[in-house]
Length: 197
Image (cartoon, rainbow, N blue to C red; front, top):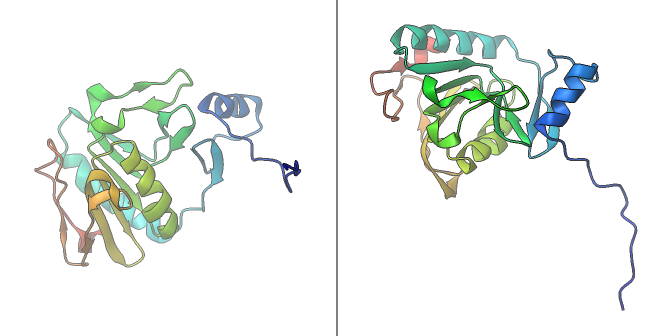
């Protein structure tokens, strides 16, 4: 016998990038609100603190002079990977030719074209190392660097559904390590983690 049971609470509403665009245009959300759209769920992000800003800016200052004009550097840019997935990586590197505008007006780059995303996990290490890294891997992003909370963090390459956070190679790097992205086109880049603050 089957007995229908009313749910304790309604299922959460799932949103799309189009819904988010309409919320921004109508004033329901403000442009400066810190949110991401993860598989249709609106997730409020923690405010970025001083440590996050110091590391992100030090890294950015080292990357900009070393990048060729053919590489796009997105700095806290909203990235749309699917209609219901908007992420805001701290830094994103991809070929300029790979980016375009989605119908909703957000930057879109196929995950397989993204050379490297870097998350500064000073204010949200569990979220950045867990859920966010898994989403990057699931969408074919070849490399993710997670930097934060007084440790260097993980540099992952070659996404796999079986590895830690979706990446096969995950290494905790000591403070005195040199971060060298493995992606083609970024081989000349190297950043001393100790110089990031």
